Length: 276
Image (cartoon, rainbow, N blue to C red):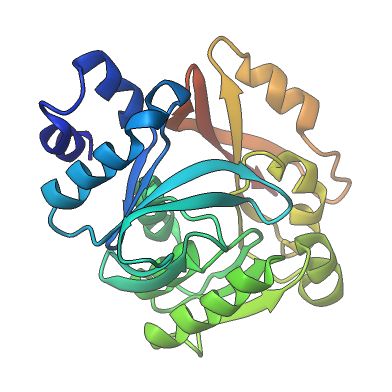
């Protein structure tokens, strides 16, 4: 991704200025999202023009703010091109409608979505607790056709888009969209149903671990819990502090994997728990 940005902005910005843009640059469908540092705000339209002209798939350039609020959305500012926030995104043979103003979506998790899909076994029931527009759920169901995925999200816009994406990929019989807070949905509808739990909400997943255990079958299962940790943080300490007490299960850490950098000296980790 960074090579496209370097190519488009070569001669427009100094190398030191360009490096500050790379970490905040994403392409979703034909929309470019740019995190522009304060020092470059006066050049935002110059940057947008260079990106629009220099990267062929892009039709819209937006300035993106940070992720905030219960629904984890970003404030976006239109800079150049077609005035829109909705686009079609394709990944691993699946198509997704995404509105970058209404939902959180990261193309940087493409490799991770494929990893999870390939770990699911035939016949499994998967509960995706913070599912957004359905990207993990749809890709998992496409790759492992003999599984069932419950796609939960509290954001009504994400839920509506997930319904669209499930239909778009012809998965109505295998992916079930559910609107609501994951804790409440599990307690009302999904107690003891899952073989595998997916928790892709790094800011808060550890607060929902007890509810993830409630969703597992009595025989146990696997939980993929994501979190953010700064450089130098002790992963073992984090796990020890947040490991839920489960009277019906013995819960152990199978593995922990760093799956990406999300900011200066801040990383995303996936912690795989096994409950027996």
